[in-house]
Length: 380
Image 1 (cartoon, rainbow, N blue to C red):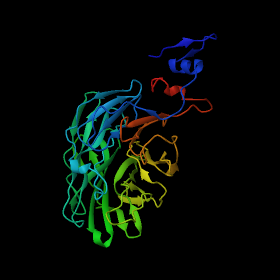
Image 2 (tube, rainbow, N blue to C red; image 1 turned 60 degrees about the vertical axis):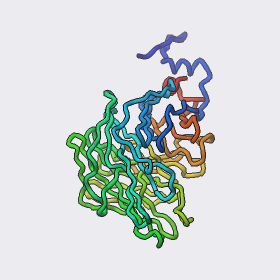
Image 3 (spheres, rainbow, N blue to C red; image 1 turned 45 degrees about the vertical axis):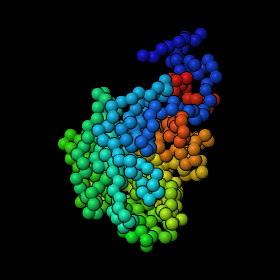
């Protein structure tokens, strides 16, 4: 229900609009949010901002809802599966990890994420290594309950696939980017990865991998890195004809080597009707974000300021610097974030110590201070 107040000309304004017109609006700054009420297992991941709330999950079993207006955390039902500790420790030999970005369904009633994270290791770098989830889980918001898919039941390049990033086609079908990654001969400076875009149908609990067996998603050589691996965010065209993936990856060098270029990041799209993959031949984005937006691939770090931008699936355009630089963040932070559908608010993991998260609301065009449409959402 809207609350109205009238001025001398009997014009009606909402509470936020009245506050904007009768007082100095708050400045447009990155603000601290309430500290996490739990110690995360590994990294935290966000849903998009939904109204004034955002959902947050870690790589274990912590799952919460955060209200940007009241700055209150609410604990929710834990997922059925988490990940083993090896999927989130800071071992520089692991080239990626178990990603859990929360994807909101088109009707806004459910969230989906990768789950049951695993990491298999062996004695040498020639040993196959799989990093990612063995299934996905679906959270129903109204009932505060989770349901899990069956484990992936197909291989990529003769090894069992792992789930990495998700986008909803409709309220029953998900496209899931999966990976299989291994080092064939680390001693000769070669690192190869394989990926595949797979359909998953919730109502019949069925994985549908199509004919194209796999696509090369990464290669590490002695002169540089061409990388599609470490899939972090997925999107889909409005007509559902193409599914997109953005690559993130880590920022560390393999032991004994110094040729890893953190700025070499590509994106890829899967053409559904042709069962073919197309790679973007560009290198301008440091990293793609762990953020869900059904028709955009968010990236950050096109410069030294780690500002977020996006690839628009409507025209494949790059749109830099959608939010101001967060000068209070820890170095390199900003990759894990949640963004409102209207692109007016972002919340991001900004620091290692508490308060870990910070948010930013854009200013009103042609006016001083915060956009009046955001004042109630952010609790001003």
